[in-house]
Length: 287
Image 1 (cartoon, rainbow, N blue to C red):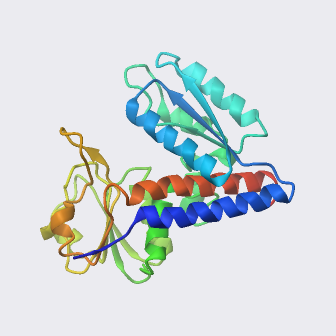
Image 2 (cartoon, helix red, strand yellow; image 1 turned 30 degrees about the vertical axis):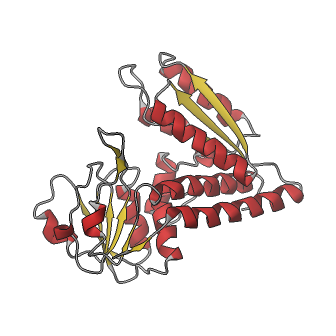
């Protein structure tokens, strides 16, 4: 049976470190790190994510701001709010909770581009994605950074290993591949058009899955003793949550595996707190 890569345990350590650094920053006369979150509409899942971010801010000693816009507010009003927060020197991190409501002509890409790169703690702005691709990141995307932290905590090196990333999104797949490459792994990205998929995934020493399909990866797609990182979160018709990996069967074959929930999810929020602290330090010339 595989060992668990527990995001709950590792994120608790990461948040503890952020809290300590925040206290030191404020004690030395620095400003309290402040994260502003914009929520458009009343999507229940988005409300839960925003609430979790607010709780994490409280835990580490940040100031948390939340701005709610009605579902019909429109792109112009949303961009106006972003610009206000960009101009507010007391705000260090700005993010807009995604996805934006469907059917109201919102442009998520334009919103991400509107956030100041120095406050882009999600690391979605083209400036920050460009720096990442050059190997000189200002901020790292939170979920891929969380995966790397999980692997580091378990002393799982990537240098010389074959890493297969299943999924090519701008949020997880692409930046995840770049981080693994920077760690000296040999990286393959697979996607919906990949042929002979199982043959490729079975080569992986480390398989990172982010496809958004419940229990898509089965035991026959994984080599014996592999490390399997499941980034997916899928809500089933019965209300239960599962990942993109068939946990029960794959756990019998893998050496390490992330649970869902409790794996990558907690790490994403912890890394968001790290990025916000870094943004505050950068703004104060202390990074």
